[in-house]
Image (cartoon, rainbow over all chains, first blue to last red; front, top):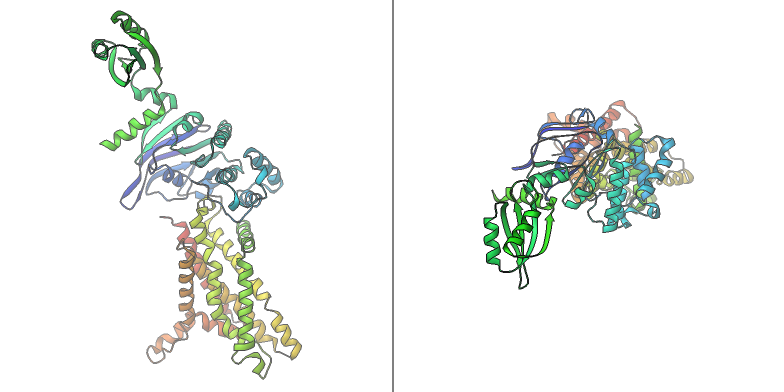
Length: 313
Length: 239
């Protein structure tokens, strides 16, 4: 569906996108994840024909973006960051305009607008001026215009920023339901968003792809082992000595300590579960185990380890 | 063409959604009425025959300010709001948007001129005007306005600030209007006819006399097409 090869774009001396390559096949919901200024929006703008690339190639639905921008545009729906809309139009008027330009056949237009108004929850505001709408509603209007022609590919730049938690859930559900039939690319710097909506993540930092895979996969590969959060009652010195000596512990780290107990995060050697070994160790050394919990490596930790690591270089 | 009309309709309506169109037309008619009846060359009430000479004498200067005001927001607003990013990723060619916007501005210009038609009606009531120069004057206004508009639209595409777009448009129009009226004869005699040919004013006078010469029409159409083309280039080439 979308093939990007060695895509590069500079603004003056800044390399916003640095030789990125990836392929997205039909039906994938891909999240571009990265800190602000990582090059997510720039990449999207090039895919949507808005910005011209410096070098490399992009093909969307079989059309080259540089040679056939018009054809590419017919196959995509795009919601730019912060949903820029004509503030003096009312919602219905705007949707009619989008439907006309996006070539929704005249006979179907009315029904299609109705459908999309319902899907995006715009029923109450159709006759209101866009300029008077809240951020959340504007975002939905932007989403509505991008989907009005039922495009094969949907490109959404930070679709949930500025929304309240309920709206976020609604928009995510909407994206998920679209994602069952369409190809979706969305960008975000909010991690749970990726975990809840995407089946593939591209982590982008400083114009490069630093990780690519399924959200769960990424979390595992990066943490490099199984880790547990454990709380013991007792002297910390002995505990730390025992943990240092234990063969199944790769590393550990004290997370907190008070009069009652000390809390550690323990990373196991290899990929096996180490819960039993921790238990046996506690029994053997007569430590009182008050808590033992498997830590699930979150995308958050993956993200920070990838992007901060780079920053320190 | 279909796309041009969708854009033109949207833009034309947007003039009337905000007070812009009403303010524009009111001020235009008041100013033109004032020029025609009181300032004149000479003023209407002191003229010894019924014609619209005063009106058409001043209109190029009034248009100089009014037409860039019509076009100034057309691209700069899109850039400022960011709507250009949605617009130019819709299945539409940049040239179609440019032509659509031009048509919308031209529509507003046309409607404004329509509202000045009571003046020739009054003339017809008080005397027996020669309608040849009057229609000639109106037609030359449309051509001149169209040329100003294409220039103003081009200026609007250069910048995301309306005021800057207005000033650039005004200056470009002013230069192109005056270029044939300056007293070069003593300095550059060879250039005179060339510069005259380039200038908007020379052709304006020519059509105003009531003769629709194909050379003048070709000139105006070339200016319009040239600036619309430049406009298309500037909005297509994005960084």
